[in-house]
Image (cartoon, rainbow, N blue to C red; front, side, top):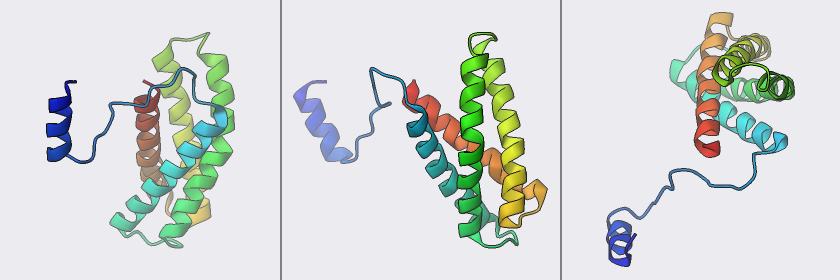
Length: 139
C-alpha cells in the first residue's frame, strides 16, 4: 500500500485490523485451549447476561464454559489428529464439534445451574464463536 494511502487510512480509521494473523507454524494445543477457553467464557457470559436466564450467575456461566472447554478440548484435539487423515476435513470437524457442543452443554447446565436447553444455546454460540475465530486466525 502506498504511503499516502496508509496515512489517509490511518487518519480516517485509527484502528487497523489485519485480515488475519499470519504465522509460519500451526497453533499449539495449549495456545488453542487458552484461546478457546477465553473466547468461549466471554461469549457465554454475554449470552447469559443478555438472555437473563435464571442460573447461579453470569460469572458461573463463564467459569462453567471455560471449565467445559478445558475438559473437552484435549479430547477434541486427540480426535482431530486421528480423524483428519482418515476422513474428509469438514465432515470430521463438524462431527467432532457437534459432540463437543453437546458434552459442553451438559457440563454448563450442571455447573452453572442452567436448564439443559439454555445451556445448549450457550454452548452452541460460544463454540461457534471460538471455532470461527480459530478459522480466521489459522486461515
